[in-house]
Picture (cartoon, rainbow over the protein chains, first blue to last red):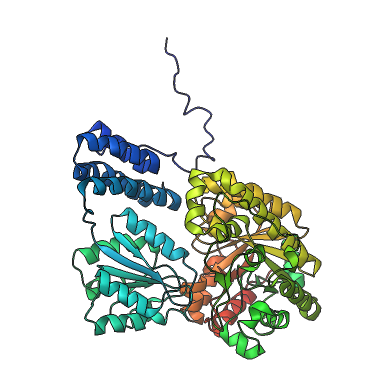
Length: 249
Length: 336
């Protein structure tokens, strides 16, 4: 006689089944311990991630822990986000968990790991509505970019200076209002003058494609979700013209 | 038929003479400011200017309702948050430093309704009622619990807490709900026919649908029940995943951005909720011309809307011609 041991498919309120519950990562690592590290990232548990990273560092090299545990875990989170399973808070928490582990690995290495590339992000001068930038930052972090977060209401000169000092692969500007987006062409022209041909992705609220593509370096960002894909293109060497051709028009 | 009668009929689920058109979010534009001679930032802080600007939605645009205020900072400011007004051209926002940390106990001040710009807002509603209240509906705007809590704590901390320590958010949601409800009832007492709750941060763009269901819903429900007039709930972004829960709040109307699936919303909420929505405020109303606005309006009406409206606050640079185009389309849809 067969006994039913799993009740999960019985009496399921499908109307309440709005999200897939927090899940473990797909198998991303051959090593059991590193798989557990990856699972911590997927669960967004920074304390557990730090604890298991320390354990893993007893047996593995810091680069192995990063490349076979922490980053594959974060890639899983990106997949779950893309598929609409994960929401923004989970992406932010997973980034924290990954970064907690990476910090310990860097400590063990005695140097900072090489990130994919830097992206400078800001919300336009005069604008303190930075929720769009919060989303952009979270997604870029999650995709392994080093985010130089300048915050909200950032003067033109400060953005330009951050680009000069950090030499990012991309710079982003968000603005809720048409009146504050007028800072964007000023930033672009100063970057040009300094010979910094950095793709400058602008978006948010009432920022229009027509406006952003009216000045050099400008690429219009329709949704915050596009930021990681755009940063990947910039990292692979696409210039602003190529990026505009691909993402706009 | 007067705009006000039209709105009353719709909320009583009777047929008005034609499709109604108004905006449940902020309505001022630079062109309206010039026409009525009231501007920002005074329109955000002085009753007379606020009322004049709000009434432009009727006197200039011919909408069936007028609404104040035009930003999301009144409750937060009265609770102690720092507000940046934004000068002539911008909408006020919450500034740093953030008022509270997650472990703090938030306080609802005894004199809440006397703080910040709230007395001016209450007076503005009184003026609107007196001046145009017999011709159009007067709508008072308040902010939803999760969004006020977000102003008190800042975005990233509240988003993290929504997963890690949701119970720590309860005292904040409690104070935020009480603050919004208090303001809402004061606006009703001053003459508002309806209350709109804007709750931007409760959008699935920011929080998980289960957070809305398990955390925010009970506070919104409480708020809707406490207010003595019909309540319209507005949440930005695509709300397909929470539309059923929004319906559970007991609100009389739901305002949608066109990013949401209007047909799905109609299917889920049935016919006893007024569906308000239509034209994307940024990509269509602000950026395109009257013909595109008309096409978008017709398309959305045919998906089952009860009220044609901008999907969100009208961008202040929006041309008057585009807003008038919406009203023209509403006039095409007659029911008699």
